[in-house]
Amino acid sequence: MKKLILLITVVLLSLYGISQPGTPSTPTTVIDGKLKIGETPSSTGTDSVLMIDPTTKEVHQKSLSDLSSSVVFDGNREILRVPSATDNLGTSTIDQWLEWWYFVAPTISVTFSPSTQTYEVGTSTSINIIATTSNPGSATLSNGKLYNWTDAIELKDFGSGTGDTESITYTPKETPSTQYEKQQYVFRAEQDWVFGAESGSLGSSRTLSAYYRVFWGISSTDFEGASGTTIYTNGDLSSNVQAEATLAKSFTGTGYMWIITPDSWDDISLVTDDIGSPVTGFTDKGATVSSTGLVNDYTDINYKCWRSATQGTFSGQTYTIYF
Image 1: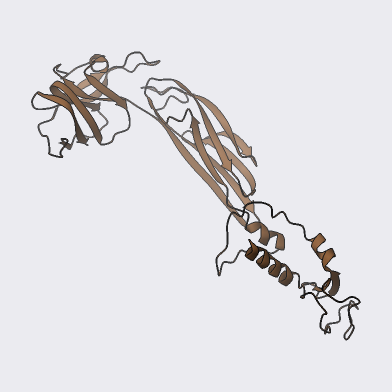
Image 2: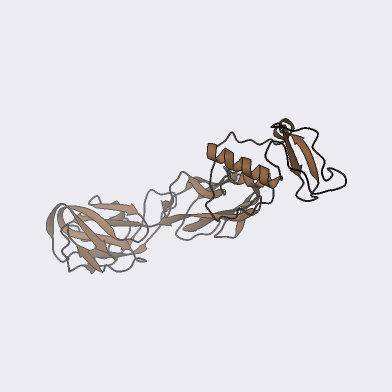
């Protein structure tokens, strides 16, 4: 901190053209009679300095007490960044140079409340879409907007503020017919900022998505060509709502191994057991799935119904399924 104070002092002296305290040397510049060649300042000693205006080159005599009282700056706060050698801070005033140390660029984010981003098709959930700008460096903000990016709709104009909230009811359906019934929405917040010679534009997005369930498990029931709610309600099967991805699942029970995915998923390319050995012989038996108990149940969605070649007894081994 002492080094910073010393550095700031040197910059103040150099920028304002202040000489070191003490008896000044004989001036060699005459500007509008402010101080004539060969004249001695009226006051000498450690309480007096000469100030040279960097624009007009006029020379003025100033006491240190007057000088210190005229330079006011709030340095009682955390320094947020430090320049490195050869950095050009791009400032043109002392205030800008000092404030640079106490500034970091703002950031913007989009969050959801509740925070869940993944839902099942057929559900209905009230969600707050929240745009938030963090501005610890006190930049000047402008043009803050929150958008439903998917439908190109401006939801909120928070201008120079630090955010806003839009409340929606997300009701993803098998066949959407109105707003917020699609299975995916992107929300985006944007804002501009300025701080001294620095400026920038902020942007952040977050996505709400809905999917059909994926099922897996061991069952002696033959799901080949199943329809209706047979698969959805079967107690032998576990399920999850998720995007297509590699699955690592535990299997317990006696019967066939079943891996049942929405038809939009790719085919299974490889299955490995808990020691990494390939398991072959899976075939797609085909099925449709209907939900039950949802706000907007879906009906007869086409699924890929993968069954192992043989039945067996499983006791919690984890299998990895690649698509």
